[in-house]
Length: 93
Image (tube, rainbow, N blue to C red; front, side, top):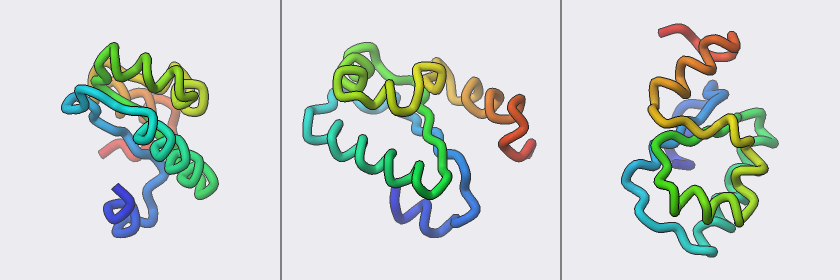
């Protein structure tokens, strides 16, 4: 993910499609938490889409949900994109 962001320095939002994540352990949660904090210092917001219930619960326990906000978890990718478009903080293309 870091390489993708480096190639697009104008990105202000990252929407993670977590549909293929079946399990997340404590180490991964800790690393994800640090990465989200790093992105936030660069003015980049993070949201998640299609997160399985078990994975979201582990993310909640790790503090990830509190960091990004529960309103930044979406059932569908299009829900996340539309939310940023409605807020005026994402391009409409």
